[in-house]
Image (cartoon, rainbow over all chains, first blue to last red; front, side, top):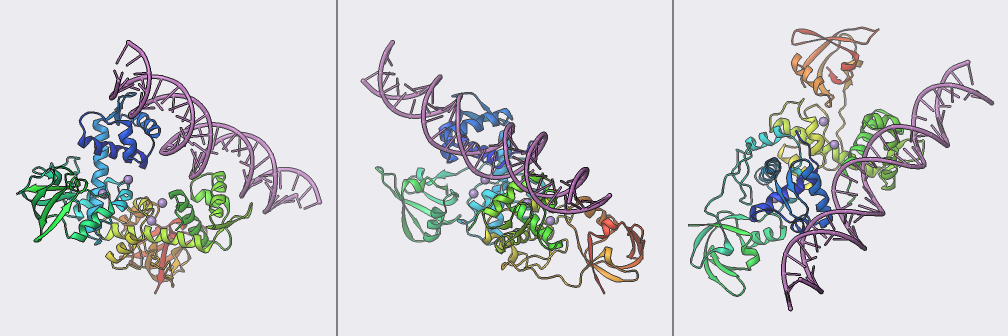
Length: 221
Length: 221
DNA sequence: ACTTTTTTTTAGACAAGTCTAAAAAACGAA
DNA sequence: TTCGTTTTTTAGACTTGTCTAAAAAAAAGT
Ligand SMILES: [Mn+2]
Ligand SMILES: [Mn+2]
Ligand SMILES: [Mn+2]
Ligand SMILES: [Mn+2]
């Protein structure tokens, strides 16, 4: 069983995440930005991960995870989301407080631990931010029927299904306005020139910028 | 708040543990053995930890933790023992399966997490091996009335209070013979020439070498 | 097609933590 | 006390992951 460093694991996770949104390969620069590091550091790491058959990489061509690399990435994401669930469900943390801690916990190496934690939590399907949790077999249940709030049309009624988890202040803001998973909303208005969107929730009106609307996913009713 | 690497933390913990048994300062060689590394590596690390005021060190004089260093060591030991308790009490691991995992979990940085875990576990006083768990304030409840089984005298009746936790096979052996915390025993015989000791437990007789007897602590009745 | 800009890689450096080999200091026994 | 042994430190090297600066390749604009 290939043993990876924390840094290698973080790279794999970042590449996997970027690949979700993009077709084809991931560019060195995009990865550098995601990892908050320099392109030259990324190049070095890509060579190493390629050497270990975790991804395919050719000079100037970007990279793409192999099946092996994807499996590793999914294992880390599984751990991350299970730990976040533990922190919220069992230790009463807020959803805005758990991402940083899970960034550390995701690197604990013990498949047995991961699987027992999964069982202890009752085999949760999604984490506290609505993200699906990959199973023991590495398969991720597809969350169908979801769209970004930014893509909703005026008049649409929907339920909040997921939010981006990596910005504490964003999540604290959602707390402040009382938005959480399961909250029913209705899209009231959308401004074409800046993409901002007005919704109603709990008989109140709230306006979101396009930036925020892209970080919230909903299920239309 | 001084941020330490995993390696630095492991050194501090090792020095603290060694200091429990020994008066005065810890030698470079003893520490090297404990850390399973070379004396030259230890010297380098001691210089660094001294620089950070975590210990006092002078060439050829060994080292001794400062109050700051002790506080850090106790914080790590607290986390280690709380996590071990979590793994056994909540995830149903055996006491022989948790030490390695706790070696990783002890480095997770979040005081909030540690304290909430403590609460979740019901503020346990001892870990699954009978070792006392330092409190939030860094104080460790002294476990009085305990002696090593190796020091028990013939005819003594006692209860098993603690065992060394870092050798899986040793713990598995204890499982096999049915010895656990709380087991009442009586010392039947002691051989002066090799220190081996015979006890009765559960109406059976078991013989321990001196090596094993030193890894078991008891409370005489 | 040629030039300019952007992206990516290379070259060389550094810090952390480890190692081996050799030197220096401390210890201990005669 | 002196000499041999043990302990400890130093010197120099290696690995991992990062950086800056410069070179090379690719992409874009005219
Ligand atoms: Mn997260
Ligand atoms: Mn991480
Ligand atoms: Mn332990
Ligand atoms: Mn450790």
